[in-house]
Amino acid sequence: MTNLKYDLGMKLKYNLIALFFFGGLLAACDPMEDIYNEIDSEGITITKTEEEYILVKADYESIAKAAEADAQTDEEKALAKQVASDLALNSFASAEKYVPAILANMYGSWGKGSTVGVTYNYQEDTSETLKKFSVVSAYTLSGDDYKTIWGNNFLSPSHAPNVEIPKVLATRMEDAKEGDFCLVDYMYDLNDPVEGTDYLSENFNSCTAKQPIEIEGWKQISVKGTEQWSANVYKGDGAAELSAYKADGELENYLITKPVKIESADALLTFDIVFGHYNGDAFSVLISDTYNAGEAFDVSAWTDITDYFTYPVPMESGYTDKTNVGTYSLKSFNGKNIYVAFRYRGAKGGITTTIQLDNVKITTSQPTQQKPYNSLFQFINGKWGAYLGNDILVVTPSDYDAMGDPGKNDNFSSSLKPVDYLPVFLSQKLPYAKKDDRQVVLYKYYDGKVTTAVADEYLLDATWVLNNNIVLHEKETFLHNGEKWLFDPTITVSMTVDDYQYLVNWVAENKPAYLDKDYPDTGEWWFGASSHYKNFNIQMYKRTGNDPEGLVDKEDEQKANAYLMQQIQVACGMVLAHNYPDAPTQMNGVDLYYKIQAVVYDGTSYLYEFRYKSLGEGQFEVAGDPVKL
Image 1: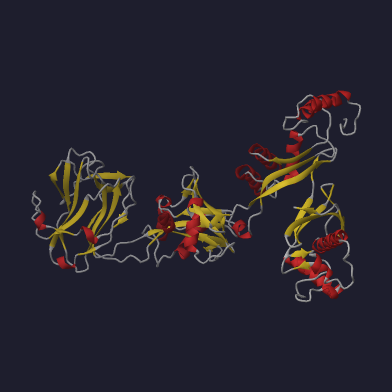
Image 2: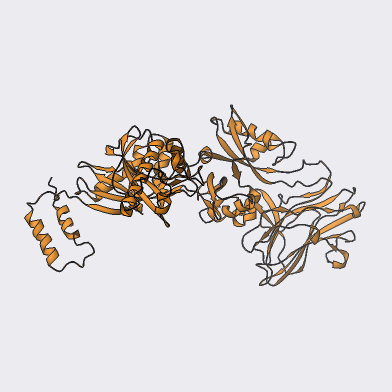
């Protein structure tokens, strides 16, 4: 291979160059580009510099495939796949390992001494807390699970989740390993069920689907229209349903229970209800102890008790969850026969809300009020138990409900993105959090096929933001060593308060006469370092006025400035030696360099960069002049 940089025999190429410069083509953005392209096409090695190449989506995807092929563990495979999904490199799929192949493909004819500054996204390792919850199983108690516990499809204080759920998980997750987590969804009632007498209990399960409700002793009276309450049966679960959507005009219908003799002052009326496609109030509840079971409906014989119950929040589209409306005391009817009427009033083109009525009861038992809950469990010492740590915040069903749409299924999805809801959720849950606080959140996510438990970490800045740990690495240098592309291991660091204080302490021990007389604990004038101001001070009157050995040239300001900058170079080299005593001389077969950035003050603050070559064993030598950034 011939290197153009040193070959003066390529007359054709130099003629091309001459023609280029003298042929009026200087208007091109890169006047050498055509020549380089011709050289590239002929397979001739050249030396070039590209100030910046930014990795694009296709590059990340190529690296992800290569890294996945190299992966040996599940963790490595996961990190490899993340490169394509997050468009960022990481600790496994690193720039040092995989960017050289990208450059070799793009700059195949570039040879020894060529350099490219590569800019890319890098995903730093997640926090230990987030790693801890990187894999969390999800499980929902089934009807069979409840049957193994007792006869109710919910848990309660007498069958507490922390006691019963570990027993279920022991049989359902036999392959659990030490430390595994599982987020469990279940139904729970804050009160234990109370046994009592049911005077009436109707769940409509015996009714024929899509046929008018016909139950012995019950009656339907149509005052307007012909549409009647009919049975809606889904998977064996029935309900009485009515809507004016298909009515011919106005609709008014009453579904009336059989007569019930109340024999206890503790008797209660309760039922469940669902609203569908709500566009107005169509439902009412009435009670009577004077109705004679006739075919006419005299409203004056009935008492409207609609407002004594609590109903689900209406939805303009879709259906609400089935909701128990609470109870109405029948104490005043003790010893009497009563009837209960469920009225529907609507009209085609007017109110057409769908009503589904279920589980009508007159009972002395308090109705159950089970609601969905979730809890996190961990497998420790060979058994499952409730996780008691406070390092994770679990989004509960009631939290999803408070968010609105996520409450329909108690999860997030591609259309209900967690980042659109969790920042507000965190601000409400952690009102006293401070800037830079972090919080891991566990939630349910539906990907279109399955629902899984996912943990994310959020960081508080002005608001809570998703902490994806992605940072931008700008113009990291890769060079060609004559055989292949290699990462140029130049490490850039910045002076910290501790670094400036290290210099102050060194001066206190070795040059105490140069300590700042006003601030001897935080400032010195041998190097000009101040841990209070976090800078080097090269103001001439300050340095000449604090120079007991007379080392600063008072007559020649240029020499004085050179001396002061040299002192800063010495100081920065000492900091590197102190901080990196084990720095090697090379990385990846390339000499290792350090750039240290420091603030220099001469009445105005400037950021300077000082470059050093690592000689090994904590030794560094200056490599070039200071650069003002």
